[in-house]
Image (cartoon, rainbow, N blue to C red; front, side, top):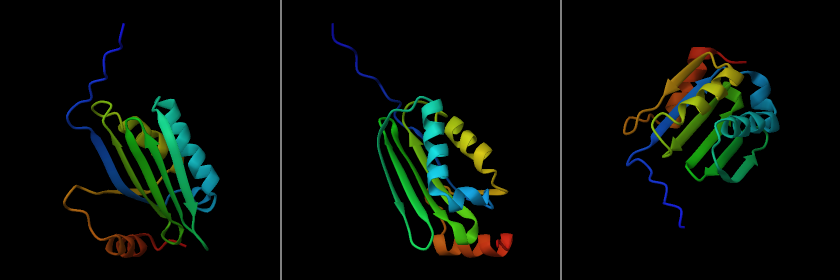
Amino acid sequence: MTKPFHKSPPVGQEISCVMYRVKREFLLDNSQLEKVLLGALEKEKFSVLDVSSYNFSPQGFSFIALLAESHLAVHTYPEYGSLYFNMYSCRGPKDSEPVFNYVIKELCPEKIFFLNKGKVPADAAVLRWIAQETNYQ
């Protein structure tokens, strides 16, 4: 007997945002941040196919998890106390939300700036705004 193909909904859920004034230890210890991200995906039973990450010098970190259901990508800006979060899931409606909620519970950002498709401000402008807003040290 052949298993039926999984039928994905025609449109998935995407969450894109900049979190700022997150707990500093997650911006300075990339392995700790990666552990949180993978823990969130595991808890919500996402199928992680591959993970790639890169540590920038002197600071900064990029992470991407390729999922059977799509992806999770994060890039940190330690000098601004912030990180960019992007997740897309075609598994079902609102499937990205539990992962997002797990991450914000761990990172405790003071503010989250959501980015809308077609209305994404330039990264430099967002970072200047964050720096002015937070006066992060």
